[in-house]
Image 1 (cartoon, rainbow, N blue to C red):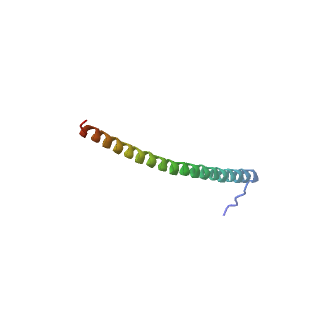
Image 2 (image 1 turned 90 degrees about the vertical axis):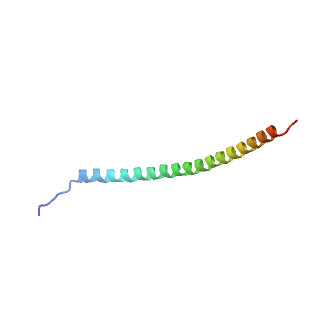
Amino acid sequence: MADHEIDPVEYGKLIQQVEQLGKDVHEMRKMMAAMNEFMQQSKGGWRTIVVLSGVAGSVGAGIAWIATHIKG
């Protein structure tokens, strides 16, 4: 078996790269958590808009029906 010497400079570079990758992954996890929270809040906002639009449409249709069926 051949001896494989480890170059300390190259080993140090690899260690630094692995540490940087760990930091990058940590930052990405934080960004993903923030995006997930934003999406959850947006989902609730859209539901509110849809419900309010439905209620307003129903009330408007009811008023229009009453206005066309009442003889004055």
